Length: 282
Image (cartoon, rainbow, N blue to C red; front, side):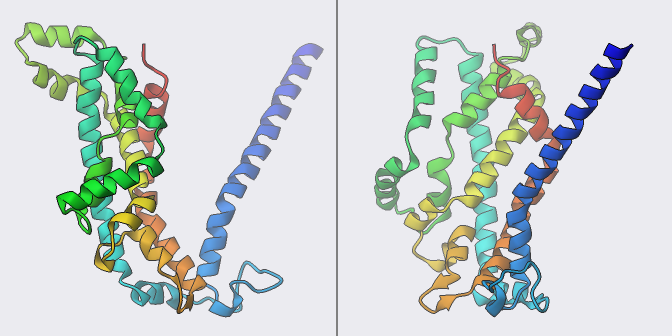
């Protein structure tokens, strides 16, 4: 009895310590966001006041309106949503088809090609941007949605993620559909894809956030302010005319709304997709 009581006490202590550590970790993660929102509501002269304070002398809600009108920030948001949404659809579609070919269709050299495909993940983006920019310029795609979207619409990461999930789908389902006369494409669309919704939801979240937060590639491919995306727009609050830190914080607060909505909307797919696809392949 004493041993059981001691074990229960140790288990309860471990749970309490775990909860405290998780709470501290969550607070550390949320602290920058809280400071960003607080700075967005401060007067410009108090953003870097010493000693620092979380709340300013007054709440300047007009900072959000001023940030929206100081630059064509609405245009930046529209550009970011268009690029991120179309890019996400293209990445999920191309990755799903490539993953199906690598996981279900047997052809000579398949595994070797897949290893080469995965090897591209080790190539830094900084190495690719110069030849990619020259290609986009020759195609006439600079300052265009095509130039912002297409170069990154085919990823080895998405193919790997979905391939790992497809490998867990029982082949007997496709065998039964083949006996009923279903084509390869029909099996892919009607059987495999519906079962891969969690994995595709996970990929959609990662891809949308990746497009939305991309800074280096839009910085190179865009020279017209009307085609600027949100990260470029945020950078424009810092310039030769002065650094508008309170407006920058207000604009940054606005900019996280689409990503937050995507994560919240696809949260159940994100959790189940990571659990089932990341390490679930045979």
